[in-house]
Image (cartoon, rainbow, N blue to C red; front, side):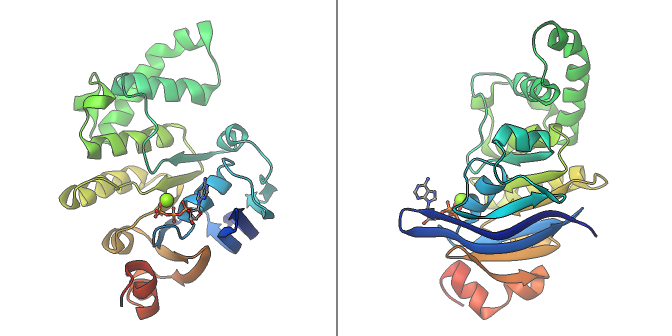
Length: 247
Ligand SMILES: Nc1ncnc2c1ncn2[C@@H]1O[C@H](COP(=O)(O)OP(=O)(O)OP(=O)(O)O)[C@@H](O)[C@H]1O
Ligand SMILES: [Mg+2]
């Protein structure tokens, strides 16, 4: 498998805190990678650096061999990197479909008359996406009224609507009840199956990482302390101590 994302010596401080330290990482095309780690271990910082929301103190980020370290979030999105957020970034007072139409318009980069002419096509595509994510019954509902699981799925659906090469998700099941977690992940994985989207997701729940990732990375105090096959990585006593605070 070829390397899609590579970081070399990636380092970021917040004041005296080293949020990410000398991260050397390769993510391969088509992989499904789960990142786990205790609070404050640098997981979101990593996603913020890759998507251009933060800049590193040192090091660089390569996307398919191209140096994207100094590009803006918008430029990085245009190169095929999309993300969902720890707290979904949605327009709460708009409907589900309106949020989706805005994402599709943003993907095209066009506004005004051109966008109005394409509204019908986008509506069709939007309906298709909502169906894939089991959200079609919510199409006309305001986002503010959605259950948490549906809101998380919509945030992810907006990222997938951008047809990215690399999809980054920050805690796709955060705030979702334990019994709904697997339903959210099942929907997501069945949607991604068959696509060539490389996926990296941050997750606090070991069971979710074990079940849905092909590779697990464990962050601890800004460093990767374990990397490999999920069932092996997550049963390691040192990893359990770092993630759960006990073995
Ligand atoms: N904008 C910021 N300003 C100051 N410190 C920050 C900022 N963002 C992150 N940090 C610090 O950097 C470290 C890593 O934070 P980060 O948000 O990446 O952790 P995380 O692994 O995503 O944690 P969580 O599981 O709680 O989401 C923490 O010590 C955090 O307090
Ligand atoms: Mg975080």
